[in-house]
Length: 101
Image 1 (cartoon, rainbow, N blue to C red):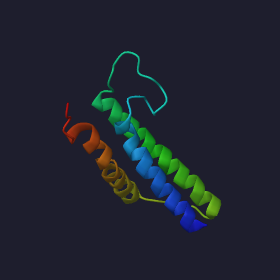
Image 2: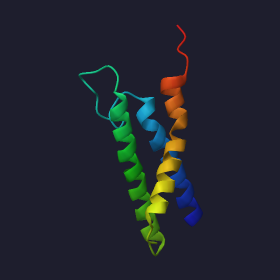
Image 3: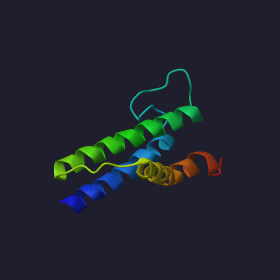
């Protein structure tokens, strides 16, 4: 069961990291009425909020399995960098891909 939870958190992190770049809605739910495109700073704020949401889900699953380990700043620095790496495909799709047409 622990392995299933681990893969679930990884899949959730991949989805959440790319979500801000793959749609124009806030958290894929709220339509932005004033702008046709989300500004980059809003995508970064959304990415940060989703990082903490995935961390919360991971914490709850860890608590369900058993004891929760305390983590230092190093853990959060590494997981934040990993979350940014997971967001790279969405960033490339949104900003670096050539638009034909």
